[in-house]
Length: 203
Ligand code: GRF
Image (cartoon, rainbow, N blue to C red):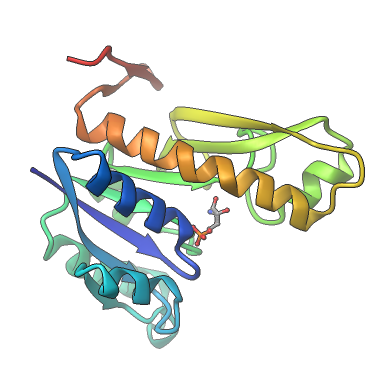
């Protein structure tokens, strides 16, 4: 049984999608803990209601990124994670933290990377007049919103779309994409070869 630790900062709907899929699909893994850098993250209530351990490492109370990341790492490692899942975790991570979880930390980003790294992806997509948008799950590397890509989901940009309508359309896809990608990891079907992710057939 693999241990998954999920990091959130807010709503936690992607965390919820992973928790629900892990349980309903009988993965060889369990969500061992949900950890937030914000005490008021809405997603913590869902985790508690589902009997999942929660913890808060309040980023505001640390003087710098290095001390926060060190405390966060200690908290995560209490749960002996095989995989760390970033689900709307709004922090830039230090290189030592990223290196510690190399090959075992995933992120979901609401754009078709390499397009639109960083914030405000839906607005950037609309402003660029693109016909397509989406989400990407990737392994986390030291460079923000880069790293070997596991999977992408695409949605059309429709006439009259606003940031809100586009974000909602992408989010629906995220809730399928992230459980799919995490499941590939816990089933040992992912490998990274020369910077590219390979997906093995099911055993
Ligand atoms: C999602 O759009 C995710 O791609 C991005 O932040 C948002 C988090 O939403 N990184 P939620 O907290 O999972 O509901």
